[in-house]
Length: 223
Image (tube, rainbow, N blue to C red):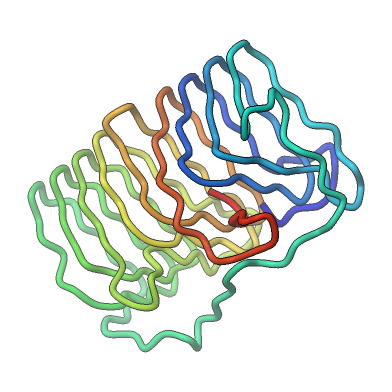
């Protein structure tokens, strides 16, 4: 999480049995509400020395009940711009609603929105759009270009919203100016890296296998 200010959303997890095989780092606020949540390591605080908030029993962050204080505002482990990608498909809006649809491989560049709402969809894709909405169940997505799956190019006011059940996604989810918001269930797995100004995760048994870029203390800038 890149946000450094205290008193605003940084990293927030609401649920039980989060399982992050990797590291969580927030440059500011850190809040976990729920029980039996796990991450291999966690650091937070940043230059404003924001106090972490952890409500619930059985939470473990690198074997500790709270994230380790880190007064340094760390830079992105990987940063992308729109010019880094060559668009295979360009449109104002992309909407995929068909169940079982195989979305053609390539880089999708939307000037407004990209939506994938069908159950059992698959695709080797990279998406760049101001607003990205994913609502289907049992989806299988892998990144087409530079390891990036979803790149939200919009502003702070527009969330990158990922909802669904029993999904299996691989790749980097990137929103440098806003919030990544994920809702899922125990059958859902994300393999990769989340980088955003702020991150909010809601739902029990969030599973993530981190593959973030190299950084001090071996953390990624957020998983």
